[in-house]
Image 1 (cartoon, helix red, strand yellow):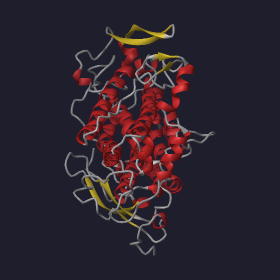
Image 2 (tube, rainbow, N blue to C red; image 1 turned 120 degrees about the horizontal axis):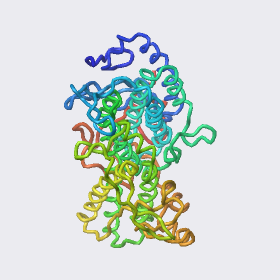
Image 3 (cartoon, rainbow, N blue to C red; image 1 turned 45 degrees about the horizontal axis):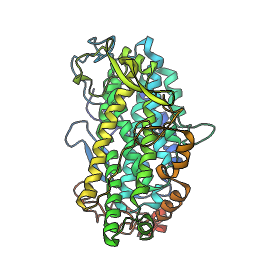
Image 4 (tube, rainbow, N blue to C red; image 1 turned 180 degrees about the vertical axis):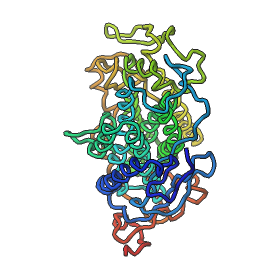
Length: 491
């Protein structure tokens, strides 16, 4: 791995200039990417200067530079974490063998599938969020949205580099297809269902970045254990950027909860209609959004019993979360005790450990989400409120896996399909809920102000205050119609 070349057309630390054929291929893909960005990236804000961080190194300190940049001019690049001397395959049948620097021929198709599936989520989320800027609750939040968007674009670049470098013509064709598919398009949808769901309001955006991006974190953690070293090194650096996406979501929901608690205390009531009439989002509605996006994100881990997951582990293409914390890295003898449906109830079954790798990863994810819920509940506790947010059971509202053909309440108890439908609007957003939340989604882009349904953050970005010019608006910007003051001439 070379030093970071920031002056190249494609910034990179992979010595791209030493492989002219690869360099030309990626430079030919770059205009297609920019065309996609202009068409499907944040609509109405492409001429604005946004206070963004750009990756400039791969070290722990000083890896990012903050400055104003127009999003189409953002310096997307290719970055890999430093190589580890003597790294070995950390799990599976090849445990202890030297990590692969080239794709093993017998695993080529499986590895390509893994990379393409991960890559497809990156542009999908940008497409899902492309209109949110027009209803941003503050300049601070608008900037955070755009930071998430450009970094998802860079994560796409990371995966495209692997496809171009290691998969020849097939990889180049897959890279082009990544720009052809569209989130929610009936004819050419994104690969995973969650990434075809609309993200039409900021409560959904914050839940998405809390729960769906957290799924992304755990998928990347599993890929960081891959015996294919270029994939491991690529995903390790992606995790550095992914942390901010989850921060945006978790603190965003926390600020909505904080504002709701303030209104409840001011009014002396927890009655949802009165909270809504005061311009805040009541806690039961927030809980229903939580239930929706959490259950949707839980699906992304795949089936509870999976031969594909077993194969990925056996071949060393994916590992477990914190693989080095396990004593047995081959996992041929162990079992996983799993509750499975039986006669409209549940029974415990012992599943071969390798076949339960999806569920093991899901366990880590659920534990991480429980910490998030605890932090949200501390906000309510500090406000003197008795209410608490809750994480629904993993069996609730499932659309894939062994629970998808049955109905369960948020506590995970089996119920009839009729009983679920009778309580659906208590547990999941109703059409009336969506109408209400969307009614609050009016932009607030005046300097230093924030919408009434969300509390301001405790501090700003990169040591700056909340009252900071996070976006410099061009006179043609959609932000001007949203109340912002132009600070660029547009010339």
